[in-house]
Image 1 (tube, one colour):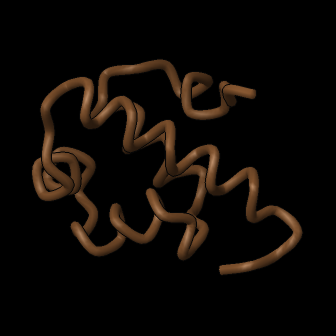
Image 2 (tube, rainbow, N blue to C red):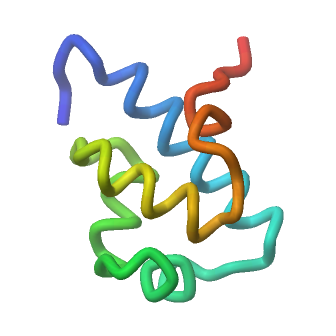
Length: 75
């Protein structure tokens, strides 16, 4: 996925990766908790695809973090 919002999606994906690794979860474990496929998690983490707000809410809930944390980008 390369579009005008690529950098934003990459930041979201990196945040998901960070919180997932921080909690010691595999992509499969997070996928099961969020009720989506492991492949979809992988594609979101690498910004290979975008996703719906509902999916981001499910991921944040599965990670037990506030949704806003996925949008806090590091410089």
